[in-house]
Amino acid sequence: MAKKKIGLPPLDWLRVFEAAGRLGGFSAAAREFGLTQAAVSQRIGNLEAWLGRTLFVREARGVSLTVEGESYLPLVQDSLQALERNTEDLFGKSPRELRVAGLSSNIHALVVPALARFQEVRPKVRVMTDSVARRSSLDEERTWLQIRYGRGAWPGRDAALIAREVLVPMAAPSVDWGAPLIDLRGERPAWRDWARKTDYGELPPSQISFDSMEHAISAARQGMGVVLGSVPLANADLQVGRLRKLDLPELQTKDGYWLTWPEERAKSKKQRALITDFLQALQG
Image (cartoon, rainbow, N blue to C red):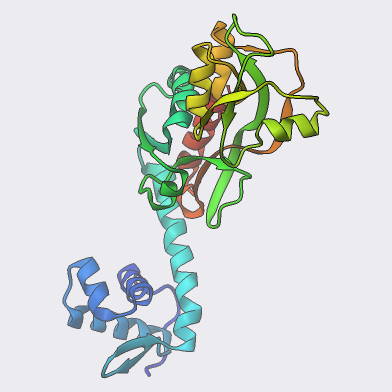
């Protein structure tokens, strides 16, 4: 190996090395940059000569990183990402689009009421929503900014709390306690949990059961009974009087509604500022 040079290697060589290390081969890196495999091999050979170190082991079945290559790769990746972020912050345009995914009920109850507030501070940003049918679908959703329900811990994702889940007996204005209960199946506490934790006595009968809080709240809004409803999801109905809280104990939970995103997607100042403005609008 030739004697190493002093200073920073050409950026083109570093980008090709990063791609080859990340993708696990010269051919894959060549496809990413639209180069020939020979051109990739030449650039990496030049980088190795510059550094005076071998970064890849060449074998008949392909290439693999040496120990020094494995040590150098994350350093190069972090440096390239920092350069990209800082370039975007200095010279890039402000984001013009915000796309968020979530359950239909969460989009309806949390995002729609926040749009006017968000557009006051970001009038040039176009908001797009993507509804998913099941919470498990969010793991497969390509839209990276998401609203999720839970306790705020998802591997590889940052999360900021929009609102804690609070459950309260609520009903239409004409319905009082003693009316049939609207039952809700799922991970949220149900009426029996509420009765146990609030030391309440015998409960009225339950004649309807839903697996969706959105549907249960809708049934209560139509006067079909009393629901142990989510305050964040029923907030719009409570504000205009379509539903009212009964004079009964509320139930605090450990869950909540969160705005979440992959850790690597909010590293630029402009992207973080956009997320912050959207979060503040959601929080009201």
